[in-house]
Image (tube, one colour):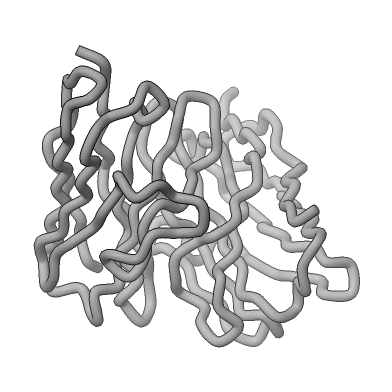
Length: 122
Length: 109
């Protein structure tokens, strides 16, 4: 079955760090670019970051640039998001999402995980 | 960054009626690179439309997309009970960032 499964979310204090993971299955993971998208409680979708299939190219939203790092382990079919210096504005459900093209990185998404919640609170 | 503005914020309609959702971009979206997603409460977003007007796999033909440049529309011809949800547009024409609209909620009148 083609699926994405996020993990690693939880409650963290302001200024703290967290590492999210997304396990992929059912498709050739290393072939496709992957993204993180977040959704604050009761709010809309916000794109966070993208990474190419081979991991060589990465992109970030201005709101997380310098604080978040996207990476991937193609041998383990896993996507990561390292989040540092977290603030209340980072509280959200974090989704990993796959693009449908083997050639493009910043594209639309044809597969989403169920998300992992992150709460930044003291 | 391309800002997407969706309107209206909420659409109150009855099953069987048609719905027209708007997505306006702050600058022209390259090559019609606009997608639409549906999200129901507690669920993951679902791709409906890509490339402005192409329906994703399994999406019924009552959903259609149109537009160009800065103005895009999602039309639902006849609302079914399962269509009441929040709809988001997303542009992917930029070379360095993706953006979503704020969403339109389609609720039962």
